[in-house]
Length: 243
Length: 241
Image 1 (cartoon, one colour):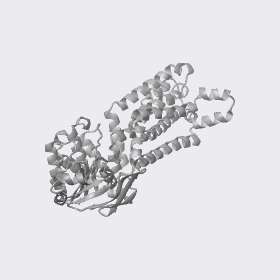
Image 2: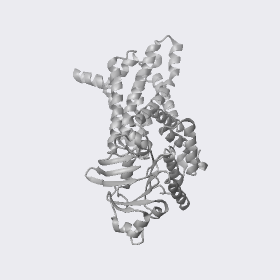
Image 3: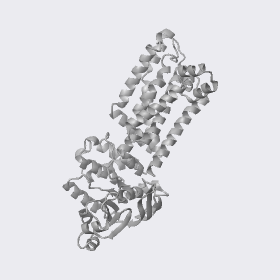
Image 4: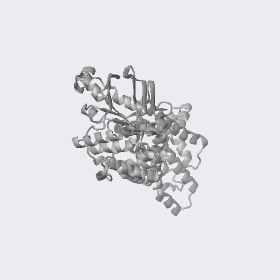
């Protein structure tokens, strides 16, 4: 009940400010632009959207997700509304989940608004729509993971800019760890263990599996584990700040 | 209704509240006086369940704030010191949100919001965005959220701060009226408010109670002036917790 109340407040807050609209437009434009330029959508005849469209998502999301959610808890600290929330007869977990789910819905909508790409590939040929759906699911899990990281980071500080910089830095590291050019470079230096560790820790390999239509149990565990850990960490941080 | 026993709060090596004990009964308005950094807000934050206590007991109508925080919080209305609000909401939207957080819904929520708006004279700004309100209206909006669920206990941290003289008078009258049915703990720097709104007052200094009594008793103790007593029993400056 309280999770729902906070969810509604947060969602309304996104739509009363230009944030939600700005994200949907920027994300939609950039992802489509990249698909048709660097992604080579026409040249590689990519019906699954794996190589031309989805592969740029983590690179965009590692900046856009923290930009949207940096204020999630830092704003509560700077306006001191955290004191109001803390004296309502609600569990802190309800507030954390309410805020998280509202941001998650914004990202689901932003991803959903890229549907013209799906329409285009269906118009041009007969793609495997399950693979495309799986790619979207992978992108959504990346959104949720970056969102959970930003939630945790924003709980530490009342300064939104600090929250943004620190969150982008962490999301960048997670993305770069498993990014193909970086992995290839490490592979050239000959350390297989390093390659394997980085691939497992980075977000790209888990995301790539999804864009190929194969979401493994390990990848699910990776995403869900990171999300739960960050949200649990947020609860711990908010509690410890009061004492 | 409010029963505080041996309350202590430490922030690292600093003792913000030191073995504080007091009680507030139904029909009583207890003024909480003290210089800046004396531990008033810290005590109030512990009473409302926002800050965890280091040592001691707090009970609200027999319910422990430490053991049953959710149940205890349902009985408290709280106005924090800085009157925090969500600037992107309208006054009415904010009060609806707070009422929902207090478990009210449907007609009960509608009625509670209307009553609070009326009690705190917010009719003119009910549909206005909070971000555009003056300090006085912001304060009254936050006061309104503390009354929504008709709590048994009110904890008001400097409720007249930022209000003009007319608004101060109205809020004091309101506190006095509410005090007939509730237990009210309110902090203030303005000593006139003690005789205007309180049935009893305590003076806190360096986290401890240094004077306790009715406004008349305290004035008498200060040789006819509450100011003199305040100067006598409190330190000039206390570093904030």
